[in-house]
Length: 139
Image 1 (cartoon, one colour):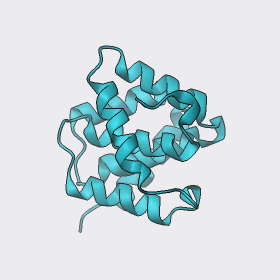
Image 2 (cartoon, helix red, strand yellow):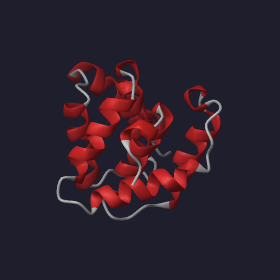
Image 3 (cartoon, helix red, strand yellow):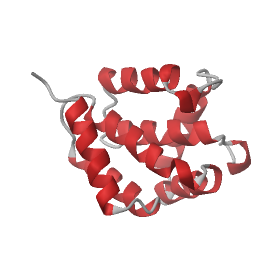
């Protein structure tokens, strides 16, 4: 398993997106496309080696199999991700959750946990969530 010192901030952002996608035990194509597009196009991922997604995905899956794995994942993220990017992590996770047009209960619970663990202000979280909902609204 990856240790905290080898996680980059971009790894942490990817891990949060992968975690919300995997939270309902059904990783959808639309979610994978959303993750891939984020990694390939957003400035925060400039210079990131997209090949690391496989390693980060395996780390998330391994943690999810452990009893306190989610706590461990949040610990890794808090340790390696600058606090100024906590809202970015939440926004990316919201976009992945909304990518398939519906947010399942496990995804909602993980997003709630993410808000708590990353200390995302309620008002900021609501704005981020509303933006995700607006971006993923079908015709």
